Image (cartoon, rainbow, N blue to C red; front, side):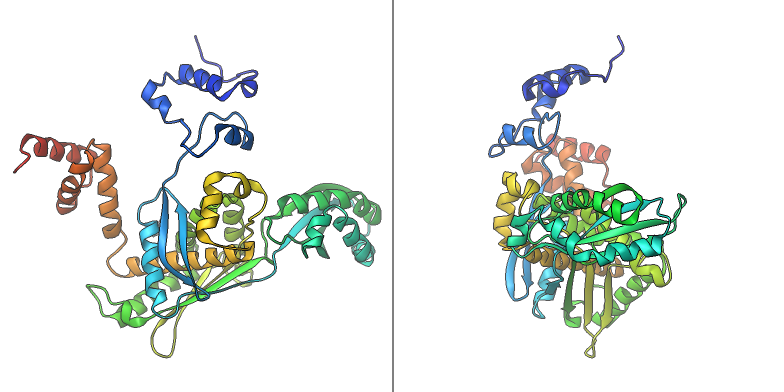
Length: 434
Ligand code: MEV
């Protein structure tokens, strides 16, 4: 009989009942089904309330990056990521930066943008003025929605009105600027935009459609910089001056070429997203904001810009900077309820969302520097190879006491393949003392 994905009432089932349905559907073995088990310390009832149709959790590896010193304070940084080398690379870059004092990082106030879209306005320029004249009353009405946020110094702070041509005619786009303090801001901003919409419709004489936060948080920026001392950049192959020049060469391609820029910025997000995930924040929001910001920065020419810059200082050291929107929160969302996220926030020791954003900017810069350094010297594969070989060995069935020997052979032979790992494993088992 053909299987139907129409599982009526699936959402009403208990987790165990849902698992049974899934097992039958997919023909999972007992062992396969055990992969959905909840780790100790993570209450199934809590996870069941976080999203719909829960059957389990998806445990990503969680590692800790060491050596980070940011604004004179030391941090251990939890990173949740599936990709080998990311944690090691961040730790290594932080060690190099540490030699020159570590990272300096700052944020702008945590101002988010909410958008209210208005169509069918007959006199857009005049309507814009009518809305702006009512600025104070509109901000007060918005702030009535969230007295607690206002009490903590946040809330609606300003209004902007843009006149935007579109395929559906000229639109007004009202931007409500909201200081979200230690929250991501999603709920506060969306509630305020929905509350203001009828009055905006009245003032403009138009028709409202969207009332939603923008992930292009250009007012909520995090910036970090670091000096990577020239003397610590020599590789086994090249003198330090040549490494600095090669990193600047690699960076220059990201400035002029979107194909390289995409990869350059991806490397930055390897670091940032890992920490965003570990702290239970919305990594899609951060990713979308970062990549759109990178394009937004290029409005004066080109398609997209690297989120980092690199230069040489007068002593020939490499100086890196990063700037991007970082709309993360510490209150609300998964950060406040997920036990692993809560433990990670405590491990990080950040007291405010802005401090977390500063850490994220520093990690992004560290990750990018590490990638550029590896690419500009020995290439990325060498570092990746051993970790990759380790994964392959385990997949091939190597026990913990066998892994090192299999890895060593795979790397030596430059043949990091599962079939070869199996052969080596068979040889080792046949001749354990060879
Ligand atoms: C791989 O995940 C990230 C890199 O490709 C980044 C880069 O090329 O800069 C190594």
